[in-house]
View 1 (cartoon, rainbow, N blue to C red):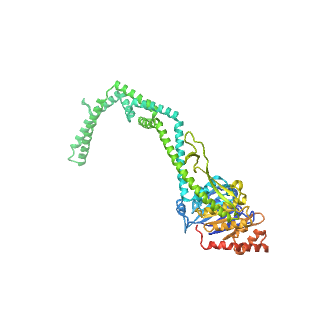
View 2: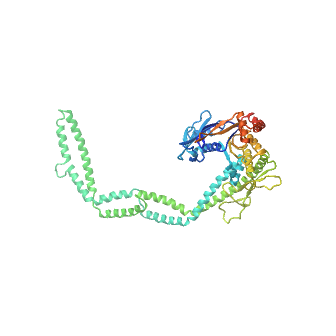
View 3: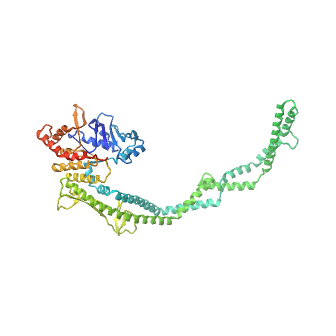
Amino acid sequence: MLEELRISQLGVIDSSTLELGPGLTVITGETGAGKTMVVTALGLLLGGRADSGAVRTGARQARVEGVVSTAALEGFREAVEDSGGEVEHDRVVLARNVAAQGRSRAWVGGASVPVTTLAELAEPLVAVHGQSDQHRLLRAGAQRESLDRFGGAALAETAASYASLWAELAATERTLAEVLGSARERAREADQLRFGLGEVEAVDPRPGEDVELAAEETRLGFADTLRTAAETAREALSSEEGAPDALGTTSTARQALDGVREHDATAGELADRIAELGHLLVDVAGDVASYASSLETDPARLASVSERRAALTALTRKYGETIDEVLAWAEDGAKRLLDLEDTDGQVGELEARRDRLRAELGTLAATLSSQRTDAATRLGSAVSDELSSLAMPHATVTVAVSQHEVAAPETPGGPVLHVDGRWLRAGSHGVDDVELLLAANTGADARPLHKGASGGELSRVMLALEVSLAETGTVPTFVFDEVDAGVGGKAAIEVGRRLAALAHTSQVLVVTHLPQVAAYADRHVVVHKSSDGSVTTSGLVTLDEADRERELSRMLAGVEDSDSARAHARELLAAAAPERACLHEGPPSG
């Protein structure tokens, strides 16, 4: 439930706080005083589109804050905390800033969040209905959505299952069309892969072979140079001609120090270290000799290596930087080729999946139609009963559920389904067209709302629909912005009574110009307008009983001090008192 609304620098409102509570709250005021700014503020708080033109002239930004009680909102606390916000004492603050330059920011429980997150969190909290919603009600899609809301959990579950399967079917049919439409491209790609894989198979490279052969080719090409260097090194380490060498020099050094070992332990340690060096030189000399003997000039092997490297280079020019990359390409290419060569199998699998999904959707569509037909009967009766209480005692609303039958397609596909032996036009919502029909008087033909309903009748139909849906919905707060337009007299009194009835189970806010509606309020807020000669400001004031009488008389006669208007206002308040008292017998949920 919305407990408080704070508005700053929005339109003609400088700074105002609206204290809210359970039951019915009405907002009234003179034309141009800024009543609609309250609805605009709520729209911003719900994540609606920001309009920098709504920022008060001369202000840097407009700000709207709302305090929401989370006590009876299942899952709302968790959603707030998941977004980074905090809930204190079962209350959370939602906020929205709109800069004069057009930038907008949002907060939930003190945490800055994207406006989309604010919209997702606030969307289940408040249902806003304005005069534009009357036109929305004329759309077939909106009428179907209303029927589905009324249908309850079973219908919602069926509709969700159907929508999920429909999305799967659409994806399957897109894939099938792509496979069939790209058969030529797939065949061309397969030919290219076969050629490339054939080249790799003909060479049959080993992992790392290109690196190994490059090293071997370099060694073979410089064999004479390497052998000369190795022989020189061997002679320097261990000469066979008796010439001075490293081994001899090392042996002389060891003997010199070994001879004085008995005079100084350090000399002995050095002699031991030189002895270890001698052993190492012997090993190295042997290795150098082996290396020198292995270096032979082999022109035939060099030619073979060069030829093999050329074959490998031909592969790396086309399929990878290295032979390892070439082998990886070949492995992936072989898998892709298997997929391309299995086009017929893939088509058959996709067609089987498509047919299975269409059969399941046909069954679900039949169930959904049956549930909607049953709900339509109940909703039509409920709305008609409500209209009887809204000064339309002879009006009847019928909710028509129909389907559009088409000729059997040659190939199943597209937006048609086979349902109970008929081919029907289908969509993500099912196969049903839903339309609200109104017969305003006894004996009158039932006609679609957009053809047969006046503005006042449409207002009452929408209110009757909302009251009927309120019993099955979970929205804790309803906001109505002058939905009583075109209504007057007895009908206006009945509108007030039905709004009061809706307020027994939900929090209801109403912007109205009708005193008959305002009389039923549990809380009456007036938007006062003042001017200092250059700037107009508006403020929100909650009225006491005496002020309510004065405001109703102004709404009735245009003046506050008319004795007859004051008397009429007292009559309205007295007549509405029992309805308002019903609320206080038990506070509404929300």
